[in-house]
Length: 74
Image (tube, rainbow, N blue to C red; front, side, top):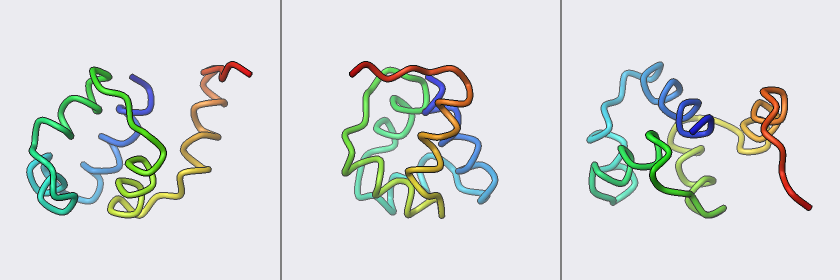
């Protein structure tokens, strides 16, 4: 859910609604709602596409997650 929360904050900072972002992505609004709520995982290509729309760098998002203590299994 942390990733979804970071993406939600970034979307809101740009003044975009879930519907606005979904239209830019060519997806239904429920797609945005589900990943923001942590109900849907994002694959790497989806994360990159969303990040671009939100003017974010995916590597920086991952670094923020690591700073918050989200571990990644090896």
